Image 1 (tube, one colour):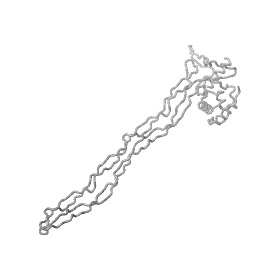
Image 2 (cartoon, helix red, strand yellow; image 1 turned 90 degrees about the vertical axis):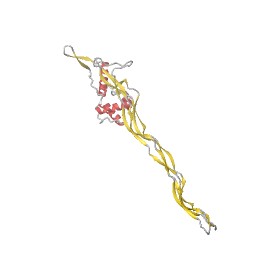
Image 3 (cartoon, rainbow, N blue to C red; image 1 turned 135 degrees about the vertical axis):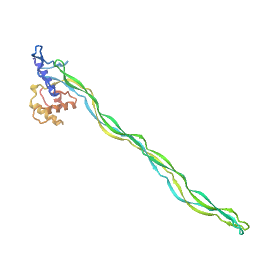
Image 4 (cartoon, rainbow, N blue to C red; image 1 turned 90 degrees about the horizontal axis):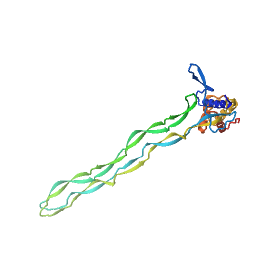
Length: 329
């Protein structure tokens, strides 16, 4: 096998290691017609318009869409109008009522009287406002907290060649309880009937004769209620209630690129230690800085590559340059 092909195969091995997928380093076993096992070389796609020099390793990597998080306000209770009712102001007073009319009598034959009843208005008819509370209905509202997205994963193909398959990840939704205004707060008018008081009085049934005698009218004070200020109802706007929710979306589409990677022979403990230290410095946990390329170091590198829109799949020169890790040309 040529040196160039070995380097490409080594880059593919690094890609499979970073993506945690099984991969054969040199060859794939297939069944022969006679029942024996044949070894078939793996077909590795070659880059287009890419100059590859001796001693270099190149790998295919994935650039994932950029994750975007934002906070939005979700209305959990609609705005409504409430009504403030002010009762009427009543003032107590007095009213003079004639309880016996004035007349003329005679000395020889006094006048005769009869008693009559009369209804006197002591409180007029008034109105008052009664508040009818608003009616709400509890409903479920569906909120998309994470959009659907497409990811690319390595999969098997006919012939054993390395392949990548696009997989659709469905959106994530969350149901939120909200209160919807069904009937706004209202007011209704009630009528308070007028109040009357029965007063009896004397009236002349037959006037006196011969001698006139003047009889003055008789007055009495009756307590009455007077409306000083009528009842009123004033509407007031109550704002809607909202809830802050975190929504996640993805910018762009996944794509496959080819990047130069560190060859197996150049991947020493000093370079891995520098990589681990720089990952820890920028906030990614690679595990202990021990110069060993373990699972934590690979996951930390993948997270850094994904967050910075770099090719994911191997220890590329692009990632080392972005981290500021020195490496050989």
